[in-house]
Amino acid sequence: MRFLKDLVNKKESAWPDILAAISRSNRKIEVLPVIDANGEKALFDTQVTTRSPMGSIIFNSGGLLIDSGWIRFLGSGCPQMERSLPSWNTTIGNAFPPKGFVLFADDAVGGFFAVDGGIFKKPGNVFWCPPDELGWEDTTLSYTDFLYFCIEGPLDEFAKNYRWTGWKSEVEKLSGDQGIFIYPPLFAQGPELGKRERIVAPISEVYQANVIALGHAPGGAAK
Image (cartoon, rainbow, N blue to C red; front, side, top):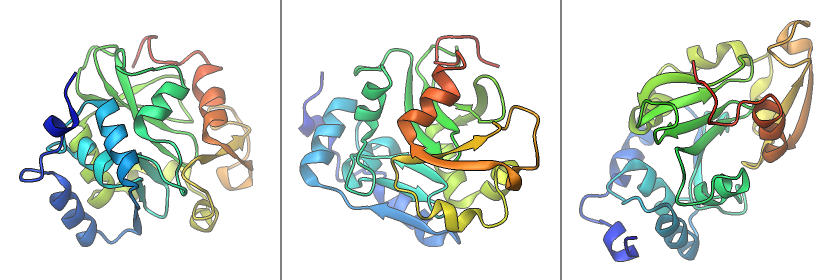
């Protein structure tokens, strides 16, 4: 267990590079405010240093809302997104120190992202549980690469099958602790996406429905 002083590296922090990438991006990205005590506690609980992008986001922000809130990267929590990275993992039963994976982000329609800690046999890779597939998929990207992909890469192409006309105005109204149920679910037959029912709900309920209830809590076989 490392002390806070061992985790905060101001000289080699990844934060300036993250802010520079955000400033270059043509997407609407909100850096949620950090509450100092929250940042310190969440960083200590996570046990990663601020030299890493994950540690820098945790220590310096309440989280990131990327592309009008479509992708939410967890930080240390704040009123706009109360869950921190460690508290969210604890909520879904992955108490710290985590065993095998770390959930670190999700999208507005119930796609969830985790860094593999060994449970998927590809340590360090980001795995994704999309709302239209039954299981976890290897993005082949690291946390850092996935972060910059979301900030500056072809995220529109990645998300195109999950968006409908007018999605942005609906997503912008969500807090970072909410998601959208789509019914019938995207893995089931039904009308085109824009004509399916969309219900705003706590993200914990969306995780329960899209991951746990379908038997896809990490630990099963991944694609």
